[in-house]
Image (cartoon, one colour):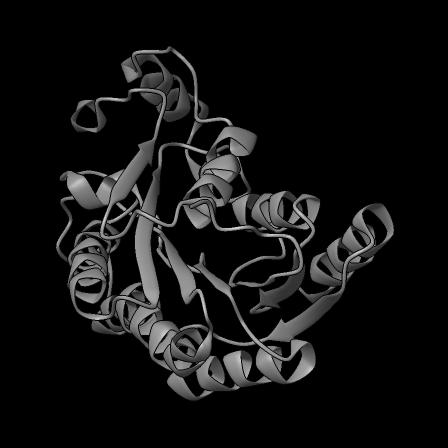
Length: 254
């Protein structure tokens, strides 16, 4: 039976800009109340909050938290539940990388590797751990959807630590999905190149190369990608799955 979204509470980490902001809008259009997390960009988060309230008549909450810091993640979930009286869907969209030459072993420091691991892997674990008591108390449980990347299934991407931690993230998703049922449905979306502030850090030449490598000869559409989160959240029979929304790109080509 499809999981009805109207009236649900949705927390989106990294929700102030880019894909996160579009995800927030897609769930708001379904009648969900939205907790918008940001790490540094408060102004875009506040503007998005006002837009969603005005256009969709839903409740919103703006919360600052670094999703690489466990204590801040725990407080983020706690504050969301306190404000809305519950939590039904968590979108682990926050991520971290530093663009570098992929094969340069000295391009990123140990601190960079640790931050990538903290946000992309440990942060996702902390999000679910904090949400699980509420999911278990919900009659229909809850959904946890991770924003992963096609970099997690290849040996390419913005940096080697990003690719490695995204691969670890996908295995974490499967481990959690196989052990945390029946009240938690846990899945991942793997976007291809999105022309957000982050994606535009690639050179024009690299963007053209990635586009040419895609079977559909286009970059991934933000709206198409965000729609998949809604589809997964509604699906009460799906867990432990990864869904690539990437225009059919052969990532090994770049």
